[in-house]
Image 1 (cartoon, rainbow over the protein chains, first blue to last red):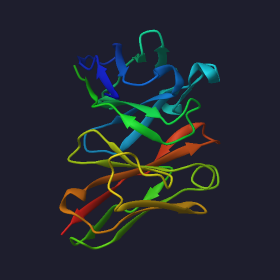
Image 2 (tube, chains in turn brown, red):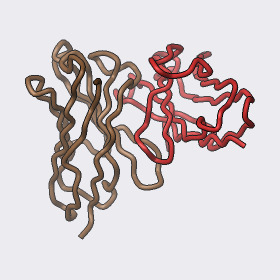
Image 3 (tube, chains in turn orange, cyan):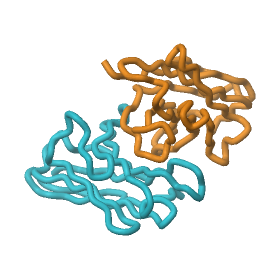
Length: 123
Length: 109
């Protein structure tokens, strides 16, 4: 079955770090660009980060407001994409979705979503 | 403020045809394929359209189109199970980011 499964969501104190994982199965993970998209309570979808496939150098893009705090990476040998989140703030409280682009560059629509991981930042 | 503009809400009756719009600019909608995503009761989003291509398993009541800087998702023969929030997104080459619309809440009366 083609799927993405997020893990690592948790309750964390402001200023701390957390790493999310996205485990892919059922398709050739290395061929696709991967994204993290978040949704704060009662709000819409907000794109966070992109990592391209190895064919495009595995380069990354990040939304300006989170640049420097959030780092996306991938391990194609394990079929996992990661999101390292540092210096977390209460505004980062959201469900974080892993999402796949239709190709390796990341300029195509998303065609596959995970079920989401809840991150709550609170003291 | 979302980079793409969608109607806040749209409603229709069972069997009716409704069209949702997604407006951007030459940096995004006019230049790249637009994706449409259905989210029911704040569950995980599901892709229902890539440009004008229908994903596997999505009924052909859904169709997509684009004209200039505006993309559209049309749902014909509206069904109660179509009630959901719908989001659009596409790549923006100026921002180097995947940009989303604010979402449209579709209510089936």
